[in-house]
Image: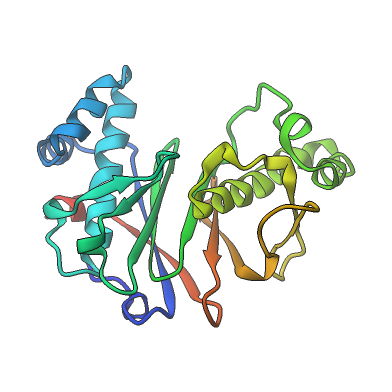
Length: 249
């Protein structure tokens, strides 16, 4: 895999790497599956659909390759632990100091990983053309977000939903708490071209100044959001897309 930006090593940037999970050659899938750990193979077997099994194998290889672009560990040798909420991290003796951090997201057709040195990071990617079968915003978003959505023309509400959803997912993933954080307890304000802003409900244990948010398009149908913990100046962020063949090189 092509080495990542040097800025991750010195803590000045986030490396965001995407790979397509569509029409992956069977030979590449077989090679990636052979590199799964025993635990990963057990998870891999639980997927019913072949497309989900393939996406899992690609995603795991992407994480390992992205980490090896910034740490002195061969791709196959990375070891991971999880916290009480199931969020994965590099084990301490491999993470270094400041620790190498990562977060993975995948959706229909794409997997994406974000890597930093020191700050916690969360990433979410969503295919914006998928159909929403329930009023997720009405049931889970903050009242100000719901009001902003409902004020838009109906044809614009679907895309706006994913603007909020990717940001909210990225934030709870960066916190390492997942859905233990109620989605209605924090609200985003979208103000392009300026970065999004977050506001927390009274009594919520966090400080909005601690977080940097960034959004981009990975493809015309894939919206990406990052939440990056501020430990100093804002980090540069940029997305690079690689071919799946780079993961089996």
